[in-house]
Image (cartoon, rainbow, N blue to C red):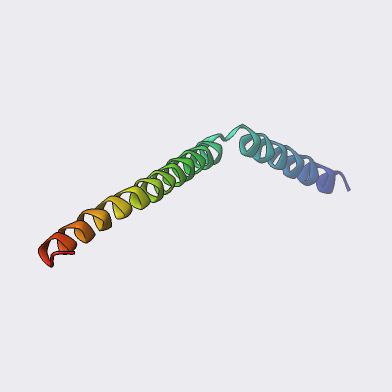
Length: 74
């Protein structure tokens, strides 16, 4: 019985050390933080491109329309 308690105590100690190492490990948290930052940057880029794209499209079609109208005497 004493031997079983010793094995259990060693197992409990190793499991506790593993748990502490898991809690103290910050590598995963850093990766998640970088993923969140990258996501926010990509959303900002998509929003900016969408807003600029509408303006460019409207301006571009206005120029093309006026050029075609002038070419055909419209």
